[in-house]
Length: 288
Image 1 (cartoon, rainbow, N blue to C red):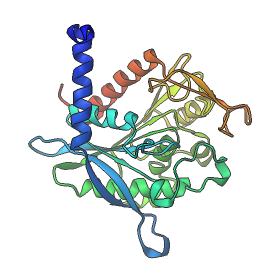
Image 2: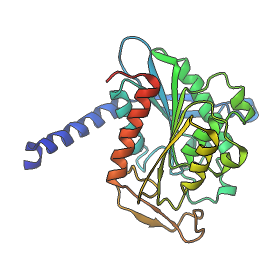
Image 3: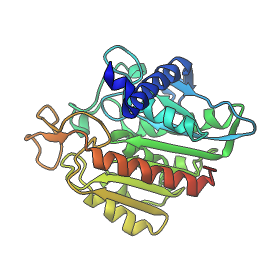
């Protein structure tokens, strides 16, 4: 019990209590996708983290990676709930959606890119539908919507903000900023990326699953509207807290068939969190 008597221990306890309170406060919602097989929109399970404050506040859409939105107990995974609560502390509403479970999938990581049963087309339509849902919520400033994703969800961020896709160019609601943690950038780089909003890319320099080079090339071609940071020694999932490990069950990566490295990096995690806050404050004119 001595740990709780230290300043660090008290801070850790406060963080755990805030997380528990925040998770209890998250509202389960159903969000209609623009993906509508046979004319019926896919109903996406969502976790809605509203802020209580006077006036209209910005809102962020959170897009999960290939492991899905929920953990083995069916709760929103800690990576997403932690960020949602952090955004709430900044005065930002947050919505995390689940693109896999309504389509009968639990994960995509072990599926080869060309045969994945939930596609980027579907996920892009999920994102565009969720942005429309956000814009219609009371207390949300529709001029300050953002989209943030990790890995496969980061690739969705690129696809949902690339005006070269006809449905993005014609979308009724688009974000005013976008953030992608370690996305796969090859597809949108080949297509040609014409950003609908300022974009921040947060990359691991040692990422052997979604390497940073294509993302840097995408940013260079797009111009100043795309910013990037790459953290030395950081691998895929550097914003997590688990140790670095080799995943041999992932068929892709820079050395197909040899696995990919995933795991947290404390220095990169802290630096990326600071950079994210700076970006949000600058783009949305947030007060401290």
